[in-house]
Image (cartoon, rainbow, N blue to C red; front, side, top):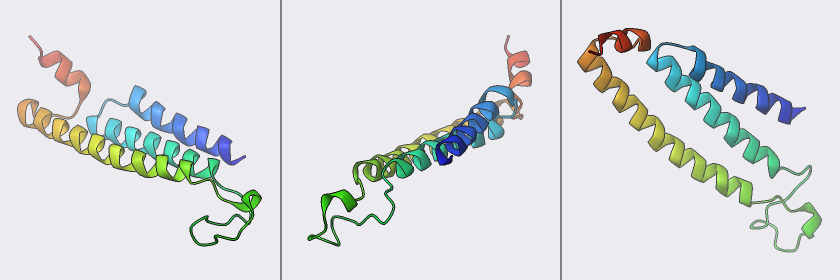
Length: 111
């Protein structure tokens, strides 16, 4: 059920990227899709009553929480932050040049 909710959240982000005409809403759609992927990574490593390998050296392997998805999520957060900052910088430059965030008006201004 949780995997389905991650898929719905990811589809919502993709919908915002594809259907919205405002650059800011497109950036928000990419952020939503990134967080859906991060949530999916974290859910992959979850185990009920699981223990961290760092805090419990004598625990059995069956109860260990998988740390690889956590590392992937952390890396994805850092890459997503850099990607989002570049998108915002591009959006600000587009606004400085065209005085609008609307993608359709920017296409009309091309000559």
